[in-house]
Length: 193
Ligand code: SF4
Image 1 (cartoon, protein in one colour):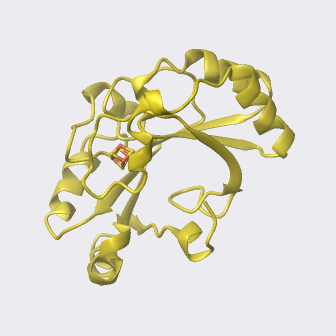
Image 2: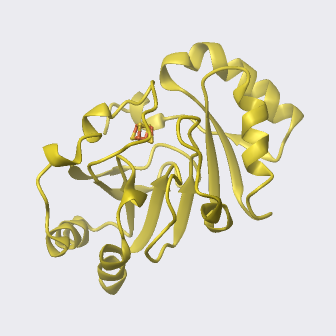
């Protein structure tokens, strides 16, 4: 759908320069999705893997973030193999709606209520990022935290349109449950993609 060099605004790699490759296509259907134009894969022309890797390499980045859309709708073996052959680190952002393919340096699992993660994905999560849209999402976050490995980094992130309402609750929750950390979408404050 698009690819661009920017600053990772969320989660564990927040603040790091990263080349984003956003794959078209998503069937998860989050009501608050901020990239609904990604949903229809057919609306986005196919791009050869070599071209994606060339752009990422030329940017000077160390990290490539594969996002969507929902990237795990596809077999990502060939893409991640080529990125790693080019010496790039492979990070993925996924709802985990399908089983994971490819070779990853970092897996950010962000489960969505609209389509539950495939059970096989939890063991690969290096980072669990839960979007907090309402109060019930804290209990839902703990359900997923119980399924990931002990070393998995845990983040609570307010849904952008609910940030004023949810951030104070997140701050209180993290203070009471310090295994969690706060994640904010700092790219939106910086007005960058
Ligand atoms: S999984 Fe991501 S791209 Fe798909 S609907 Fe939800 S927020 Fe949007």
